[in-house]
Length: 148
Image 1 (cartoon, helix red, strand yellow):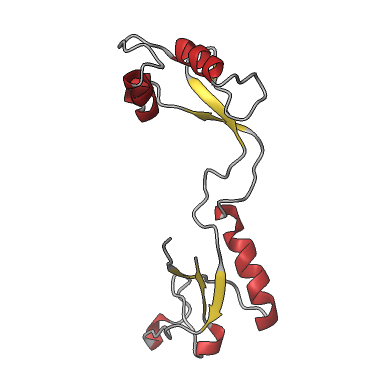
Image 2 (cartoon, helix red, strand yellow):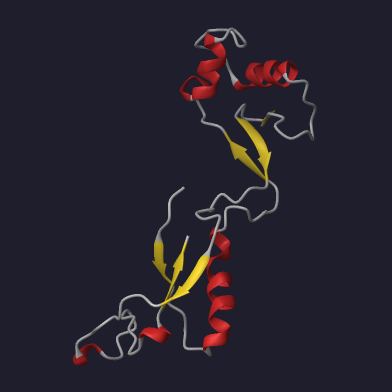
């Protein structure tokens, strides 16, 4: 488990709304967020996929270089007795690329969030005031960080 500090810069708002606003801003990157079902493709070349190589070495898949996703999907789905619609069922599209149906968040970066007050005060030169690229605060109370 790793912990990182992150500065979340939001427009001015009452302090009691900060937690909700910061969580909403970070939610698209929550790893446990379920998203609409999509195709999660494997690499185009099955020989470059570690689990394919491992199953060749175990004798579950034929150890051939010309092994394609159609044959892999048929053998692996039969091996674990999965049918279309089951979790972990491997599909193959019309271009013969293997994929799974997934609902996990492909943008997921964090799975736990703790907001805390404090952190460093950001200083700036007086002639930089008004620069939209500058994030600054005059009090430690108005600067908050997100820890995940």
